[in-house]
Picture: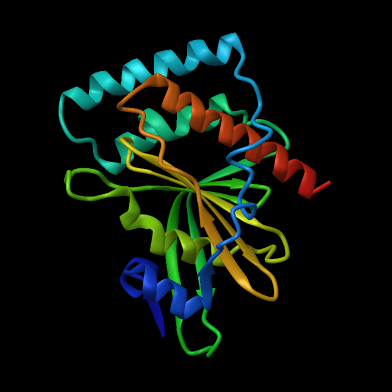
Length: 212
């Protein structure tokens, strides 16, 4: 039986139960967003400043729909981080299929942006309702990460509704663990957007190292 991921996995507890996942308690599990962060060049600072001001302007006019957030914030941020350049390749609205261990249920979904080396998944949350927190996308993001075609390697996710951004790391080995970064809040400062850029640049380095 096939069912949409967004319908099958609606809570964090459900995602943890279905995929036998637990949140890592070791603070060193997800250091990629905290240490060895690359410097931001002058040209990147200029690009971030322009991106930030553009987003603030459009956001001041009202709530932004999912497609607009992707076009206005997520996609430009990935471009500035170099994730649209070799050796990476990009698929938009990528289909994901995941068969549960019992073999009786198949979960299907579509990711907004998938950056390949098959390890970075970007989920954009529709923010037409102010009550919709970016955390609402965490259960489905974990499901997407579980569908990583290279389960022996860690996978990463970036989740955003435009106003907030956070990162996820998931490892599938003997035990399945995940961990989260802090929330970056671009509405408060362009420094927050710059911080998210540094994390993306660091993740691109990690992905290159893991696949060479």
